Image (cartoon, rainbow, N blue to C red; front, side):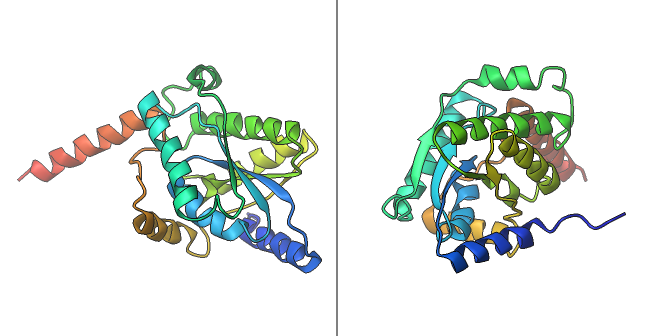
Length: 220
């Protein structure tokens, strides 16, 4: 079996090339939450003029969606990113789009086909928005999570970008201690860290696991 692409090395090659040329092109960064954006922005802001796009119709319930969106805005301000020119755009919350995208996949396990459909929905919409607003580059924070499949994310992102004439910045932001750094920054800025990915299905699975773990602890 051939070795898979080293996405972090590919990204670093691009970052080094942009630095060599003295270029800093505009990039749309799809973001799911403040913690995932934190270390990601440290890697990107010197190389790109970043606009963070919050598009996550999968997140449930609505109060959770709003909490994550507001926490992302607070982090960008508190960490000084807004003052340095990082912009935040939020698309309308439309959970019906998510449920349409995953219809028939409701009973799939976490990290399975339902998650793939969710990634595709958000990356396709990010590509649409980036093309409509004149961006040449896009990527997502999702690859910082150790629970996400970087191969699927990068393949879906590259396909979505290519269909609209954009370039997708391949990434595996959890590399080079990226995930560990996101934990450090979350502590530094007091960020809310959710205990489930976002959708109602992942919330149910998270709650089931906690219940099962509690029962095991109670056993003699």
